[in-house]
Image (tube, rainbow, N blue to C red):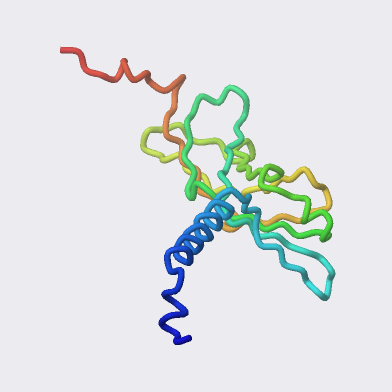
Length: 160
């Protein structure tokens, strides 16, 4: 049987099976959780996981702080290192990235001074025997508003 006949024989069924295989692969790929890449160090026996996403940075302030802040960059990449059993049990829900503004120097509160901080981020997990690192290790935090609260949208419109 020539190669041309081998390809064209039942071509409709072959095309349908190829399309079905691609559709199943795309569905499985989209629905599987993407935790990260796990690597094992053969010398130390430790494993590390590098997540394939950026974690948002949560800003911690003192209670009653009325200011609004922006964070640059808005997310950091996280790498966790520990025992292989522990690393295999970690998911994205176990990781938090925090920037603690309560340790920052007090802003001057003058209109001519930008209240901007460079704060080291802290990576917290629910596992105690895991070492965590973030890239970048620090974020820039800017104070947007000072005062009691942000104006409501209806208050900012000019009245005729």
